[in-house]
Length: 383
Image 1 (cartoon, rainbow, N blue to C red):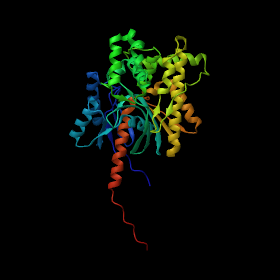
Image 2: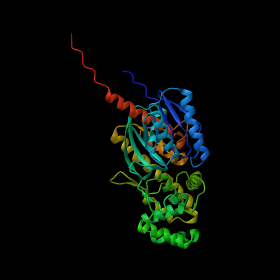
Image 3: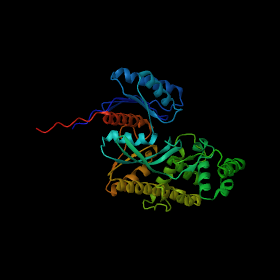
Image 4: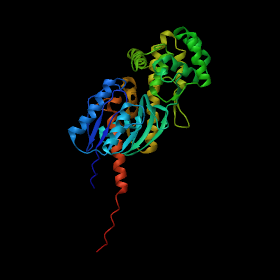
């Protein structure tokens, strides 16, 4: 029996590298990339784009999809637009959308395992996610596991100051008393001591499972970045150090210490002592060992779940996969495990392609609801 076409859905994207997408009959129609919605001009551009998408394609839409974060301009615009059109506004979790965008782009019909790795996205529990292992099949999905969370001392400020994430990792290792001596000369003794006390007392220290923040912690531990002014600056510095080492020493070993705990969380704390204790001439080697260990552990984590769930398809999404070392090593390990690996094609692995995942999920949910509401056709009697 042929599958009914998906309903048309407009999606407004997220916050970073925003772009809108209109899914018509399963085919995406994109707006331009507007950029980050912290720029008022990007907000104006998004509003104009969604109106243009609706006007140019004429087909009535069944819903408007958006990120779960209520403060995003894209979310607020989606809710307002849905109300004016008399259709539902459907919130879609950020990392679920990352994996769904890959599924939609590749036309995968069966269940998949997804690794969604990025800086941050609001989770269904209200926490900051970013290192997620996901199972997804059509409209259904489940968060199977995540990276062991780190505290964000100072909240969002910690994302701009990698030394704070390194301090958080020290605290998580039970070595928080080293924070003032390690970082006082760089940021001021009073500031370093203040962050130490914040971590001890758990004041303004929300938790995050973000892969991006673990990269920041590694870069801060190695002294590669104290503060960053550009997105992913610390992670890029860490990757560059690792690349230098691997170019000279391709046989560099992965660091020991990453483990999958009883709650199916990938715990990276065991990798950090080698970074904090690295000598000046061992920084590049430690950076490479961190990359390789993280990639191997991620691939093992996804492989175990694929075997348990009976899926041969693994989808990789989220901005951390711009990291070539991570991307290629994870892919190599998954292929060695006889799994099929799928990555974003058109818009890259970051948030620029997120709206496709939002639209696809909302369309799948509507289609599933419609199918459930259809009356069962009574069997005709035999002649």
